[in-house]
Image 1 (spheres, rainbow, N blue to C red):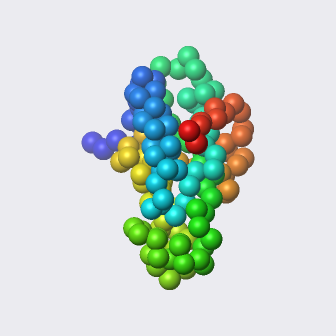
Image 2 (tube, rainbow, N blue to C red):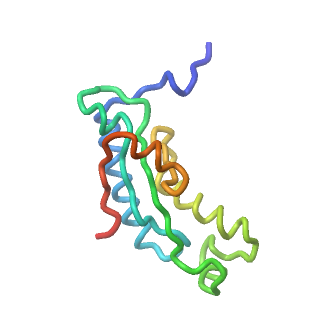
Length: 135
């Protein structure tokens, strides 16, 4: 018998620990010059903030607004040490952002990252919790 991902639930205490780790990784990502994107804004939304009395959750929904650390066609963006080094437009624009997402998720299947630039309506349907993005 197989179970779908939606059948798996996490306890609120686990979500609290995941959120605390995510907060730390946001600050680390923004302090790390090897990432081509930084987090401009981060919010928690969904059942974590809308149902505070709920003991089990499906996932932790996080909305992230990214901004380029370097202008996309600059020498710093193309030649910065690490994953930024490329002249391919797709890799230069897509992979470095995905690299930050993977770092933030830290291999957790319970953290869902949503790009605020394309998913505003889902994020702002009810309550949100702003996260600190700089020290």
